[in-house]
Each structure stands twice: as C-alpha cells, then as structure tokens.
Image 1 (tube, one colour):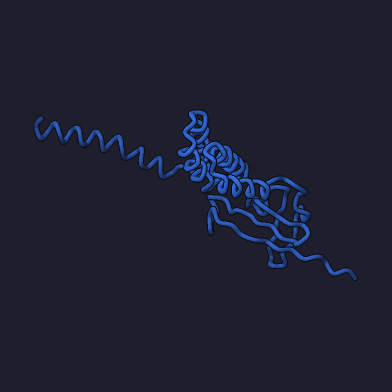
Image 2 (image 1 turned 180 degrees about the horizontal axis):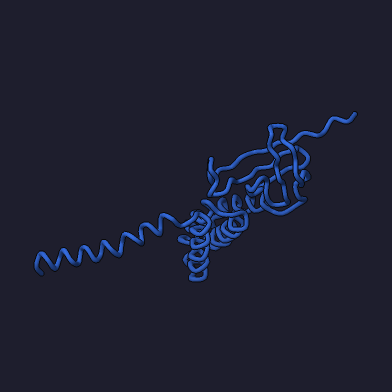
Amino acid sequence: MGFASRSLVFAAAAGVAVPIVIDAQSTSATARSETRLQLGDLLEVDQRYWEAIRIYDLAKLGATAEQLVRATSGGLRSALQVAEFTQSFNEAAVLRRLAPGDPVEVIGTWDTNFDMVSEITTETWDGSAIVSHDNDDNWAIVQMPEDAEWNPGTYAKFVWTQPIEG
C-alpha cells in the first residue's frame, strides 16, 4: 500500500471519527444515563450481574430522579444475584430515601426577599429536581440541572423557616 493510499485511508478514518467524538461530547448527562440504564438492563437479562452493577453505578452520574431510582433498583437486583449483601443493603437504603412520601410543604411561588421569586412544585425547586426533603426539619436537597449556568449537576440544600405569628 503506497503512501498516498495510506494517507487517504487515514484521512477517511479521521473524517469518520471526528464527528463521532464531537457528537459523544455533546450528549447530555441525562441521555448518557439513559443509555447506561438500557445497557445495564441488557447485561442483567444476560445474567452478567457484575458488569451490570458497574454500569448501573455509572448511570447514576447526571441521572434524573426517575433514572436514579431505576439505576439504584437495577444495582440492587444485580447485587442480590451475586450475593453482595452489603452493597444490596446500601442500595436499598438509597431507595428508601428516594421513596415518594409527602410532597415538600412549601409548594408555590415565594418571594425570597432578595429581589427574586422562587417557584416550588412537588418535583422541582426553581427548576432543580428535588431529590430528598424533610418537612419536619424544613429542608430539601435538590440537584441542579445539567444545563445550569452555575454548578450544573451538583446538589444544594434549601432550608425554610416558619413564619412568625403575630
């Protein structure tokens, strides 16, 4: 194979690889989580539990609340199949924390007293997913969206106070 032929093959391979790399880097974390969940499900069906456990763990990175439940459930099922009881216990504890209960009690539109308004729903706090909350202790843990301007994909804790009567 001559130099020109090898150069042509290399250029063609590079031309194919560059769009793939660019496309892979532009995939959202949520889409990557969904792909990993599907792979984990296939590995679990194929009884390749050790590999499924690893993939389900990777699927948790950047996952939505619903995807986090699916990844944790898959990890729990796979860990039980290979008698990883400590990991199974930990996954079950995570699922208990993620279990739906009473919605956060401060649902509505609120003035923050900093020239801003917060919109709180049963699932979001100003567009960030509520992943856990405690109405008795007045706190909520939220995950920032992957496309957030600041701290994308990170977690934050919000605390609210009871109004003073009188």
